[in-house]
Length: 216
Image 1 (cartoon, helix red, strand yellow):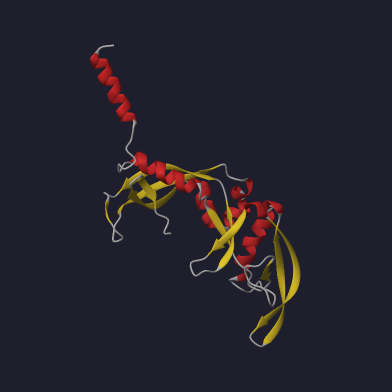
Image 2 (tube, helix red, strand yellow):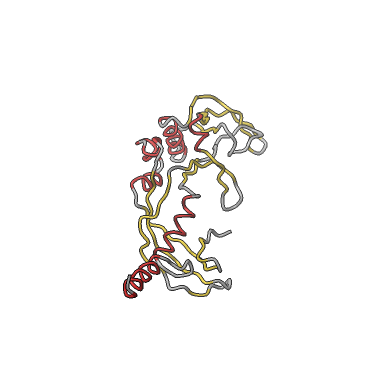
């Protein structure tokens, strides 16, 4: 093999190797994919609005008061009835004693409990202010495209960062995620199922390459 052929092959080999510290769509797609693969999208279930005395709204089962005149409670029930239709929860009618300051009220409620399918998809969701709840996570997200990114620049924390605009789709969706009742009751779910979804990420540079900043 002559030296020109060897040089050409060497050039191809180098072209196939990407420095993980480079700011490139290829590197950023890899970093984002690694992160979102471990953090699938989730929908958060509303807490009880008529929890019995001595229980927390985030406890299970969930209690949603039955008051068709309320513009708030009807959508809450719709979200849980969608879970029932999708096989994620069971619902029964009942009454509970609720405690409000110094008075106790008997309230008609719809009582919801997760099925085995629902429990398999459920995990704890922690709110911004430290409150807890339940979320249902689903599918395998994958970057569809890295659209653009800012030139790497120093941040106030002393690191070099780049802000990335990208889109992703979600594969291997469970059957309940595309259930019509679920996508109607949870518009955020429909947005993800229909995809692709536009999103943003902040990446920061380390001695090992770029990393995903998740705020922790």
